[in-house]
Length: 467
Image 1 (cartoon, one colour):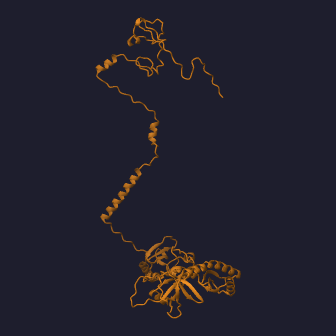
Image 2 (cartoon, rainbow, N blue to C red):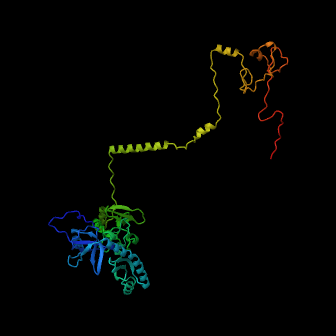
Image 3 (cartoon, rainbow, N blue to C red):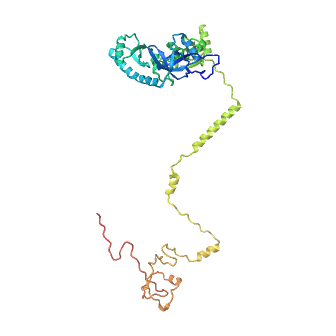
């Protein structure tokens, strides 16, 4: 519980309520009187008076809300309420921490002693008093347990005064704590203090399946939250008729399958038919009245009236939306799959594999006079790529040039004949120096040929041998 009035200033003539609520281990709370008028706030550690010693707790509530809590728990404001000594100091807290460290080992050792004595009880927790004068053992059991021998052995083992306190399974779950199926911390460990009995009728009223694994909590009992909404369901069920026998119709007997309480809808099914038919509560009431008179109704549901026509504007808007959807669907179909970079389309690959053919140039057709002149002209022989315009092979790096020693002298200082005279030699043979030349054929230079690369002129070719 949160103190919403803690920040409010009290009137000058009003005295603050002098009783404080203090919280101890496991969510246990008790009321103590602030006799010394200490300035306390929520969460302060205080040293309180307990039987046979003192204990340390934490302030959980103060002010007028404590008065309401006392009325709720039926606690009288009398002299039996013990007082608060002081605010806990650092020395008190150090001793308190040392005592709390002993609780775990004490609990495990106590369980071993219980197993040795073969007692049918479950030890769930141990709490030491701050002054280490008393230890309280919390246990749960289904039947009455005789633990007189157990107390003697525990007192000899731990050298303290022993108190055995039996708690229910719900209190045990609240002391241990945990997370419920709803995902939140358990109600019994946070705010729930009064545990009311929960029966299976609460689950029946809420139309829940009677599955123990789903209806039981961590304590092994029915969940306390089944009682939270029970009153709401009871109020809603007042207007829903009770169907004790099947509804009689001309199609057959309709049996009740389930009921939706808040939607006021009841579902019926025919024998041999797996389909369920929803029927409103008012219609079920009418059928029950007719069956009570001995009349069988035509069907569970009346004829459904035709739905009114839609407004023209609504129909137009819906049609536009449908056309827009079709437009986007068509765009998605047109989109092609992306190919990885560097990969061409199959059509382009086929074109690349075909041999390339050079297009033929069409000769322009001129006038008839130009065509006759072109026909009268002598056609020149096709020129080889390896020869120049004059028919000689091209020179490569000056290798085809003749040396001055091999060059033949010309007679009478005559110059080289022109191209026309050289073209008269039909055979195109060259004559060496000193040989007589024919008519109109000048002496041609004798050219030396280089041997092919990688071979020597006088060296014979080596026969091939396989290794």
